Length: 548
Image 1 (tube, rainbow, N blue to C red):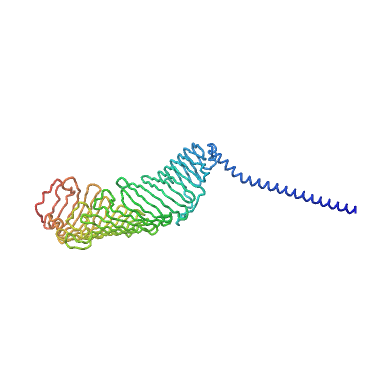
Image 2: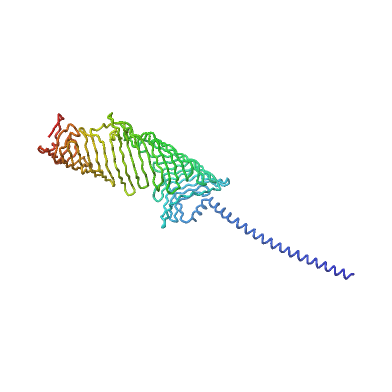
């Protein structure tokens, strides 16, 4: 009995010892696990705190002038002259220059002021950005890639609000070409919604002021008011007020032009498309293109409209009324304009077919000019002219109907590099009947030469050639052959019958008679040769007709 009790006690003791050993092992395992967790958490804490410490150190450095200067010295290619202040507030310098990656940026008198305290309100506040002059030079890359595709708009939303005020930038040049003389901006917004309180752009005498809203999502919807000022060809002002709506991808515009041109404007444009599809219509009640134009050449109740794209050209049409002295003249214009030329041009002036001074002639009275012009390889132009009884003199204020009526004119003309050529045929009505005229013209701004000149009338004919010089005093040379030619066919007081050769050369002088050197010789059939009168000869008043 006693032995059994001892054996039981030993068993109980052994079990307790085993339990104690197990508890000690578990406690040791827990300690090792706790140590591991401690070091992991410590390492994670260091990884999290290290960037914070670095950023805090940089911010603290930027808060001081010395720290700002040290940070800027660490930026390769950046050089600041007499810089002062803190980038964590207000900073300025006499000049700032950066070079790198083929780009050279030079900034004159930069001033930056922003409010770090706005960050607590989840806003970035740029209070001031002033630059007196900005020059940017970009070296051309060895492999320049030209993109011919459409422009894609990025969509972005800022996690912070943005407030920009007092941005004032002076002259900006890019690779030596001036982009603007002045640029100013006041704006704000958050996410993808932006309000442009004021955008100001100036280049020479051109200024643009804009305000409104822009969304930087999808196609970038816009709603802007734009006011532009342009230098007028004459007068004091020329301003254009536009309302832009739609999106940056598909932009609609409407507005008014005031001053030099009083007109309504309306159109659409796709500025991101590579071929730039666009349509524009201008409508106005009256327009004087140049101050010296007479009232007869002032456009009345006119419009012009262009629609197309850069690839295929812009089809252009227009209509207007000119207040001629004999009644309104209708103007119609059509053509196709590309970046290199204008072709299929058709300009028509029509005076109606109501008859002339009660004579009952109802034939159309018009002038039609068709042709083309190009400016890619120097300015040149070609035209075909067709005139039918058009009262051209009615478009010249104060000019009466000439004694010789131009009933028909056909011809081809060209102009290139300052020289012009033309071949013309015409039918006219003189004092004693009809006549047919023809000539070939070749000249420039200083002189003109007429060859293959001919005039066939019911009273004789004339042929020959001649030239007129405009470079000094008006001078001429002519060699003509007459066959029973009657000058009275054109001017009744000169009634005569002339046959033979006529050679004349001279120039206009201040006296009543042009200088003729050598004297002109007029040989008339059946009469002795006639020489031109001396320079001091004063013609007597006409008292009758002279016939030889």
